[in-house]
Image (cartoon, rainbow, N blue to C red; front, side, top):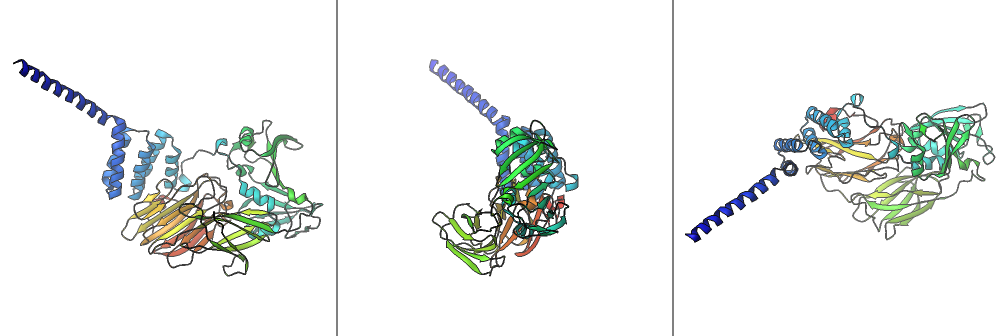
Length: 515
């Protein structure tokens, strides 16, 4: 009996232990964090199989478990977008922004709203400031002929002091040319010598040089490590922030503490206008690396042919072999060139290179794409140092009605298209690959920073289509705003727009449904 009682106690104890363990397990499984993780995992699996209805339910359960989860809101919004249910996506994102104040959700929301009704976004603040080195380099090395060639003349007028002030397309500034001791005869009436260097450049809003909209403090300027930065007295402005960068002396009106506000008076003075022998045009060195569009790794073994002008069949002036680490270098006179790049396993490209009259050394990486397969396309976006963060957008509809949409917050659209990486620090490349050309697609570029400086970004988009010549589109410097509508691909046939908000970013576009 004793043994039976012991066995009974043991069995009873075992059941008690099992019950406790079961309770612990159930408690663990039902914990909000674990339910959330399982729902997110389930939603992703449903998406992979194309079961959008259950994916929506799973994401909704995830949000219920964790109302502060940005990933859950973004995931559910993308499902709604894929199903062309933009109203649902907008309502969801509004709730998500109100709950989390997430910049990512706010950006997604603004992309779904028509531009004239977009909800206000956070202004760029001092913490996100940077120096627009590309524009600074232009001011420090470009002649009158360079400005004409790269931007196009918008207006020109003679001044009483004998100087000439010009405005150029896509450059929100007044550029003044004057006779100086080092360039005494470059201006006469309204005629400007092609080699003349500006003596003064005044921007409508100098803050655009720092990528901000409303103000920038002296403390933030100090973090940019500007040369000879200081606050100086000014006879008219009272106080001014002064520094020198890229052969340009900068003076911008400020308060006594060095804070610069929007609309501040300013003057950017290229130093070369007062240098001895400034009018002598010397040969310049162009250098950089050849890189793979998808991996950003260096490509060795390429061969470069430097052709004069913008014509792919222009006269060859230099030929160089790329080094073992993908580096290249050639020496030419300043001007406009087309560089033909040939490499084993890659599609031959013709890359525009422009070297300013007083640039000295021109740095430019060149991107190559592996040969695309039948029925595929590759789109490569590159740009200069600013704006720091341009974003690639592909929207499309396949013949079977499937919506295709890729961006920094939805980098893979099923098995139909993919954005490789979201480059947020300037230059790129950002590479979008379309794996199924049986449909109609549009490719757009957005300035995430909202700087309004898209036209000065130096952005190029290169499109690779099977059995077709490579097409490289340089951004139209007349574009205003933060949207560049680049190309449309209709069943493998390319149409170039190269304009501003040509197609708009209303809900009908970001829903990925094309008419």
